[in-house]
Length: 278
Image (cartoon, rainbow, N blue to C red; front, top):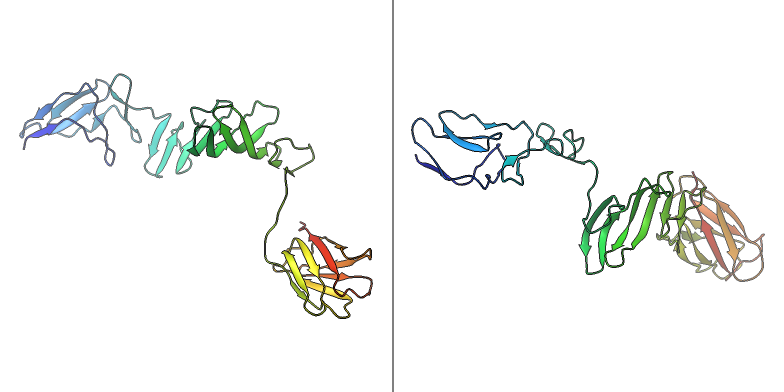
């Protein structure tokens, strides 16, 4: 059988383009129908046996270098077949994909050590942009946001600092803060169930906070049963929106009871806030 090859298929399960200096090789049907490649000389030759790909090691991911030769760089590009892991920047990948050093969008300044974007327009790069600069005073572990390629400005959405602090909408955290938010905090969820609260009471909100309108009729207390039980009885506060009368609150992991010193609470409106605790 006459074998005519202009491209080489090397290293089982991987396909490579042969060096641009390669020429057409005819291996005779008898005595030399194996095409072998030697990496050090960048030459193909016919042989009577299959010598494999000389000069490459197991796990090599060959590529064409600037000279047009097929080569390898195991320290920076390595396939660990036994564990099915790919290493970039390492020959010892610890995960399915291990990247040592940077994954970077070339248009974003190198001070933002890592960046991965999945959408962009003429101005902004959107998606996930991680700005990490260990040399900076803020010592960010990661800073997620967007980068303006025209103005050169980075807008932070979530910043995680080396001391464990997290900023949402801000990168300036007080030294004693583990979480700071610039803007409103809104919680969502199912509203508690209202009982023993007069005739036809109503509620808007969720377990974390809301407003209760007490029903009609003589009513001295109002019980809210949380939609989801808290891990520990939450600290709660409540206010009387209808007059200046005080309101007492008693909370458990499952309920919040409002009581206006035994007075009639009929048709009054109360606001409440509950927060979880460790």
